[in-house]
Length: 468
Image (cartoon, rainbow, N blue to C red; front, side, top):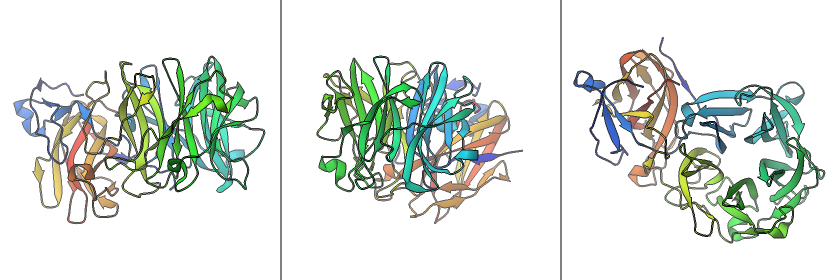
């Protein structure tokens, strides 16, 4: 029985075949030239190419990504709005096709918790801890930060609800983050001074344990520059970043629902992290809208598989002025001579990015072997029967999401929903990526995706080389 399941949630709402060399030409549809042909002459119709690069986004939908590396795997969590979900994969780029688990949902005494935002995952003392923000029955003024503790050593296993990470001031707070500095833990968050002063500031407090604050929060950053408050005075999403003995806090500034959302940076210049004067703010944003990428924010940081390259995982608006409709992306960054991070500019969606260093090619690319007037037909091959991740690179400039038929080996599947892409961009940047799971028999298969005058067009598909 052939099955397909889509993986899409919003904040608000291989093969053992012989490998021979060949290449595609790079075109406006973004087919990558850095590939290897897989297959023999007998299976030429069903042969694909092993890609050495990828396109953003790495996950369609969701927001507020937080990724960590643990024992050779990458674990991602992100805002779903209604629960805490984790994804786990051996690679950064295939995280959407990795193992997925909803590790906690509100129930029982916590069933009134809603608007679950910005989860983050940490390991302390043999336990996993997940911090997140939530409010009570949709009342934003009641947003506070909470913590879960794992029941097992498996990060995707079960968790118990510990409770609120209580700040003595008992004010509105979101976006929890942990700073581990010289063996001591500090709790970071975005909050208000009081309900009458709803400017979002960054706070820090010492921790007695992974679940408790041991002192009152101290304000270490307020939105003072125009780039932090031109739409709304907001500092949020603090994430600690350490390198070469230096400590930074990368945070998001301005209105998250507008193109002006960007990343700012604090640097700890003194020895006392609880002294606001020891934190120095960069006078300009360190990452902001460019190259047709709008509202980048909420970054987290990991190293590549070989540990030699730094990567930033962030979200950005799906298209110009798309508000809270965002996708999750990844790109490498470097370090300046003075030890500060150099994030550069956001890479456009039309850019094929080299795989993170040490990451082996893990997807096979197939272009349509036949393109009927209303259908793109792909011939694919897998060495073993099972479920594979399928990434579809598409362009949808209809102005709305489209539902399009999917047929595998003559059997209709659940329709695919293609969110709109940005028709104001150059052609190569009008594409995006949708991921879903498909179950295929061993050997050759046919995959057909409907295309029509009021539908998304499909450039190519990619299948993971291994079953998911």
